[in-house]
Length: 169
Image 1 (cartoon, rainbow, N blue to C red):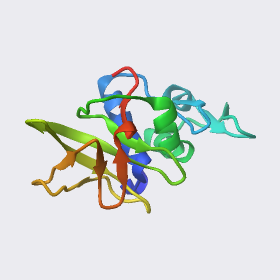
Image 2 (tube, one colour; image 1 turned 60 degrees about the horizontal axis):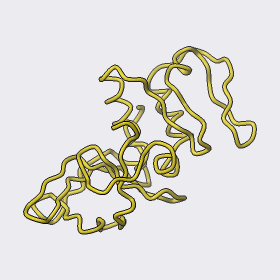
Image 3 (cartoon, rainbow, N blue to C red; image 1 turned 180 degrees about the horizontal axis):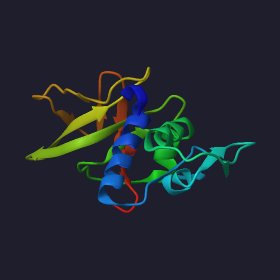
Image 4 (tube, helix red, strand yellow; image 1 turned 45 degrees about the horizontal axis):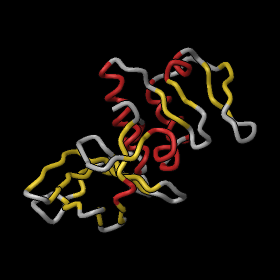
């Protein structure tokens, strides 16, 4: 994506989109309105627009992957991640996200999960506002963060109820 700077939800959507594409899976995300934004429609030359509260599609020019992702970043965010893309889970695993939908909201990607006795530790990847490069947020436990019912990062605290997994995973 041009510039490789994304806000938090954008970074997570980009990583997910690239993973789905590499797996040969269908790539589609939801706008904050709940309307789907499938790569297949974009690839066929259609473009989303919103004359009101609903996303509609109109003919356009064939566009590339980066342009599609930029459009997804424009239409989707933490609200759509929390409401349409994911389901709540109790125990974290790599690939899950912590997301608090809102304006602003925040989301981070769990890159890895480890346990030591009853303790759970996670490696966290994130972007932020203003837009920045996706990066590992180094925690105080040799780079790891301890999840104790939730997760308290320097700039955002998540409750256990914010733990989400991609639908179908």
